[in-house]
Every structure is written in structure tokens, then in C-alpha cells.
Amino acid sequence: MADFSPVFTKDAFAPAGPYIFVSGQIPATPSGGLVEGDIGAKTTACIDNVAAILAAAGSSIERVVKVNVFLTDMADFAAMNAVYAQRFAHRPARSCVAVKQLPMGVPVEIECIALV
Image 1: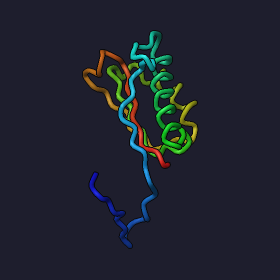
Image 2 (image 1 turned 30 degrees about the horizontal axis):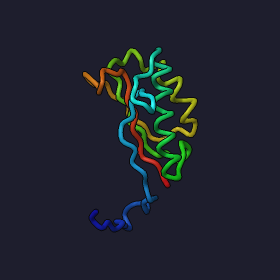
Image 3 (image 1 turned 90 degrees about the vertical axis):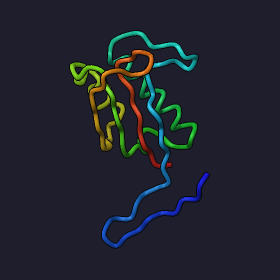
């Protein structure tokens, strides 16, 4: 892996860090099966997967600073957001975009950046 050095400038606030980058998590079980149910249940599964990865890395949901949510149908936004607001109560920065398709045909995928 390449060596990285922090970038500091007097023109911006110093960066926080170090970070954990959690790649997109779909509503899948640890054995690889897809979670059944409505978009709320599937969003819960995505966040549970994110939380498990963060815990294994020594972090937690409360340390998340940025979230990207991908939906195949923006009509699911309100139901997804109801679960999201409960689990990410500290309101990290978030983007939510509609995409044409997600892996394995799932309707939601969530990725994030967290502090260690």
C-alpha cells in the first residue's frame, strides 16, 4: 500500500482522521442470502451490515461522518429515511441518489466514511 501523508493548509480547517471507508452494503445476510421484506427492513439490514463492519474496525455508527445511499426508486425515500433517521441520529452528511440498478437486484445500498 502506498504511503499517505495528511494535507494541511492554512486556508481550511484541519482534517479529522484516520478514516474507515465502508463500501456499499446491500440488504444481505452474513451467509449471502437477500433479506426479505419492505424497504424499511432492507434499509435496516444495510445499516446492520455497516455497523458490523465498523465494529470490527473499532468504530461505530456514531462515528460516521458521511453516508451515501443509493435507491432504485425514489418513491422509497420516505420509508428508507424513517429507518435512517433512527439509526443515524447524529445526522452525518448524506447524499441519496436514484440509480437504475443495484447488485443482485436490491432496492437499496448504503456506504459510509467513519472515524476510527
